[in-house]
Image 1 (cartoon, helix red, strand yellow):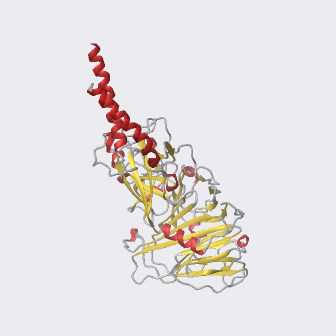
Image 2: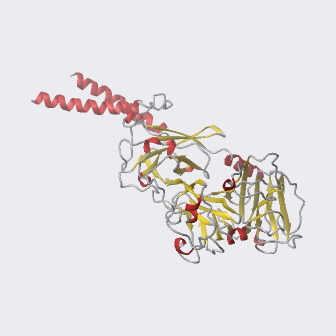
Image 3: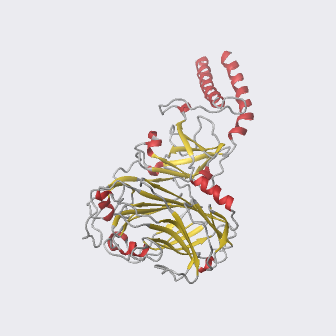
Length: 518
């Protein structure tokens, strides 16, 4: 009789829970960061250490479990010689590998079996690997003790995501180990990156000693298309966000010591020794990473392509140099667009007619018009005493300085300009100075305002935060219980606890009936 009474009470409570809890728990994410990724490392999820990266999947909760795309990018600390294919660790000798070997210096690289970097020596998930998904795919808090079909039980990890710019915003993503029936990409492909070397397969035809090594490589999403014709040569950019014309607005992403000083440029960087660390196209992002810029064989640039943004990370590692420019020179097809930055918010028209633009240490840039809107947020990291930088702008169809690369025009040429000498940043020479440039590009519809560009810059400077905890209600993982805010005036754990108690009670009732029948 007591068992029956207990069952009645539990069933009544469970029914009440089903009327109140799902409504709150089905609520979605309140994050407003649709362009931005969440990047965890293996160190953030020690419970998955040693797992097969291809077996890690992600879900969100929106009233039910929905799988979302996740990507694992493996990394390893390697000698630069491995990347060049001359150190014995990457898989062979690169074509033309008789140059002085940049050996003895290590770095954390993305790994790629299609380059001499080779696969990660640790093929399972380890502390330096990256796990990435998009903030736009987050959902709301899921019921405890719940797992979707196709996942190993128990293997749930709860990832709570917050926005440092909005204390009220949060979202949730849940990581699981697949039972083999699920793919991490969830059938999605946010970015398509095709690396196409004109000479043929990279491992057998790339000349790491002497360029050029022409290519026809493109990263494409629903919002933009970015083309490369050699390692350092970025020569086509189309914005394809809603309403944008999609025309090619870029002449070159340029690198010079100073205006009109052609001794070094993106052309000479590509003509000298160099190699690729990775060319990868995944469901969430694509990665293009390479090394070698003339007498800076350890200088490195990474392009990380997401659906609506691109991160460009440059690591200068070279002997002392006189200065550096890193700027975008637009094509005549960019005519009519307005150029703005945080020091010139009113803006000037890109039209090949000279303008006066205030110079200084700019933080963001915006070009916008019927062609679309491109926002570039940038920051420099360095430890150089007395360091300062300014900006460059030239809009002139008949420029007063030689155009070292690309076409003969300067349409809205703009970007950071370091006018002072830069000390040695090459660790191979025992130098401890460093200079790193980080640029985030956002691809937007026409008509973006200066205020909107400033807001995107603020977001690029404030990455999303996250915390990872196992769902301790199901057991399996040894961890402290997760603290979950009350849901619908009731502790969030109560519906699941009641369900578990109900299941136990039903089992007890079945045993009691069997015993009574016996």
